[in-house]
Image 1 (cartoon, rainbow, N blue to C red):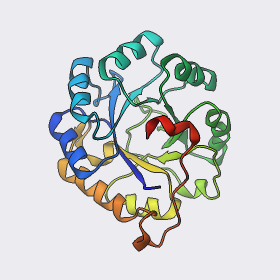
Image 2: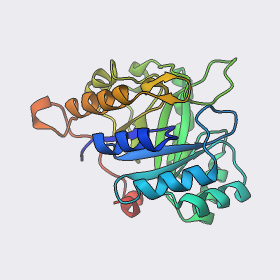
Image 3: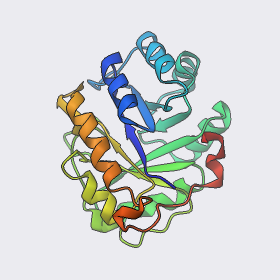
Length: 236
């Protein structure tokens, strides 16, 4: 299974085209007004139309209610919902059932104790996104450019695939993939020149470096990436 690469927080046609042209598997749009990466529904709809059929479209929300989620789904028809707030396992299950879309739940990691939350979420989500837990004074739940201790994931055995996030950039993604062999990698602030402003060269470099470390590539000598979950068949 090839490594999946997600470029998140895209908000312009130029940067979306760059991500698609460089070979991103997933493109994410943020629907969270406090974020500098937030996009309105009209803009998001136009971007989704450009991306459809070329990459999987992911809608990132933070503790959104059903009305907001319904508006987003109607506007962009995403392939996946990414829940990046404090959604409980019960809420994740309810969203997945109501909207009949695959769901990726983000879980913040700072210490080994944070891994305990994964068990409940892997029962109700299609994929997990392991992100750095934001600093206490952070406004945003993600996109803070902060890595966590990757050694915490040593020996991690999940029943569903996970994507690695948190502080990834073109300079460290190769090491991350080679050390952890995740199902996928997710980047936002690591390919920006300013908060919310994507850098074309860094997008291309990130995808190039991640592909170079792809453990499904025999030239890397790596072990195979995590197998895809049966619950993700609707994504293929």
